Length: 273
Ligand SMILES: [Zn+2]
Ligand SMILES: [Zn+2]
Image (cartoon, rainbow, N blue to C red; front, side, top):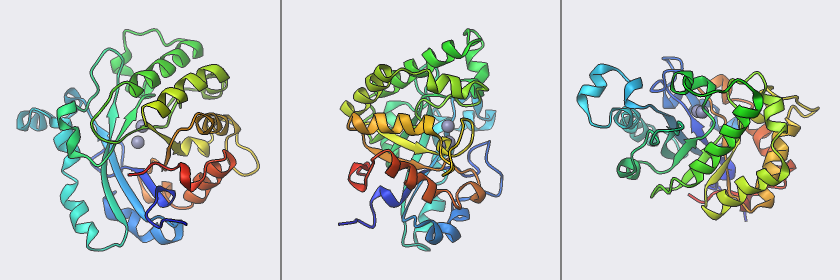
């Protein structure tokens, strides 16, 4: 039987203006007018959890954990929102996992969140942190993306953990080549580890954004291949539109569910939160 609160009807990757890359007017309630037409009943907010050197000096002066405190400021808005909707509201965050550094969320602070999403493929969009790394070819970027995926699976946070936009080389002009170049056996290695560690795999907007070629249904065969591999390895899944504004939320969830269906993923395969 269909559970109306299951993550088949969820979107766990939503940003608001606590993320620098979101418009100032995006607040949690921005998404509320559209939940019915999107058939969404679970909303999860996962703003970027920045390293301390990426937030303001004022925020750094206020707390030992300025990146965490910044994301937690949303709590009040979420409490107010719960009174206005029947949707289940969850508090998450999008954690940086830059090579050579600890993740941006210290383990002792993880209990503040209902779930966390590890961003294992932020590389080119965080160029400053990778200044000393040679990422000059698609092969090198692919290797790092796979290495970071394995790393994220080994983080062992004490709260439910997912990987957002898995193996999606954000901002790379060679996206198609990088993704298609991951061999079947390496995909199986990645997703077998994720399944063993109960790390949820995100069914992400990269499926329809157009960084790789799209088919007649507006979906990417390259990313569908990754999803099918994850399903074959026994992973659990959640949906993530990665919306930073309402325009990236509306009209997207039917596509995400269609992608899941085409990869053989059913409601039973969804993450239990
Ligand atoms: Zn991201
Ligand atoms: Zn995001």
